[in-house]
Image 1 (spheres, one colour):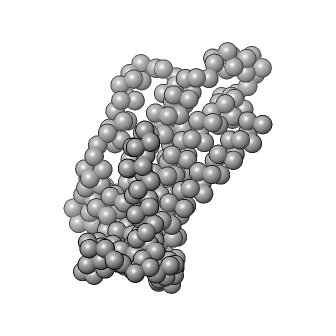
Image 2 (cartoon, rainbow, N blue to C red):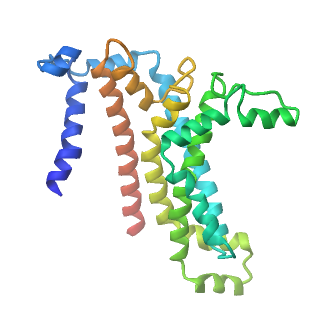
Image 3 (cartoon, rainbow, N blue to C red):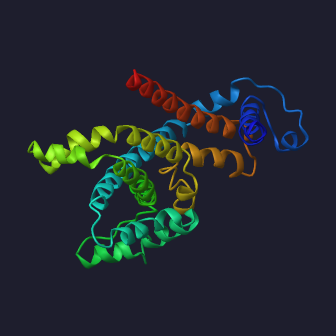
Length: 278
C-alpha cells in the first residue's frame, strides 16, 4: 500500500509541485535542468485575464452541479425507497448515465444540444420557442455543460443516498407516524437528520469529482466560446498542452490551485465530522 501511494499519489503530486515552481520549456521538460522560479508561475496565473472568469466558472459549475445532483438524487432515493413494483428495474436504468464512458455521454449531449440539428432545439421549436445556441453562445455554454454534468452525476447520488436510506430503521418511521407526522415532517425531522453523515460524504465526493471535471467540458465546448465555459481543469490543460508553446509551469500551478481547493473542503468536512462526534 505504501509503495502504491508513493508511486501513484505522492510522486505525481511532487512532480506537479516541482513543475509549478520552475520555468519549464519543452526542452527542459524532456532533458531536465529547468531553472527555479519560485512563485512566478502562480503570479503569472493570477495576473492572467482568464483567472477570475475561470475561478467563477469553476465555482458556478461545481456549486450548481452539486445542488441539482444532490436534490434530484435525494428525491429519487426517497421515491425508490417505497419498494414498489419494478423499483429495482427502474433503479438499474437510472445507473446507465453513470456506467457510460464520459466521452459517449458528452458526445451525446453535444448532438442533442446542437444548434441546427439537435433534438432539444427541435422540441423547443415544436412548441413555438426560438432555438437556443446552447454550445456556441457565451451566455449558454456554461449552462449546457452543467446540464450534462448534472445528468451524469445523479446516479451516484441516487445509489449512495438510497443505501443510506436502507440503513434507517423502519421503527423510527412507525413511531413518527403514530405521533401524527406528515410525509414532509417525517422526511425533514427523521430522514434528513439521520441521513446527514451519508449526505456529507456524498457532497464531499461530488465536490472533489466535480472540481476536476475536464472531459465533459472539453468535448462539448472546449472551454469556449471566448472562454465562457473555461474552468480551472480545462484552463490547466490549455496552458500545458493546448498551445504550440506549452506553459507547463502555469498549467501545473492551476492544477495545484484545484488540489488546494479540494483539500480545503476535505479538511472542513473532517472538522465538521469531529464536531458532530463530540
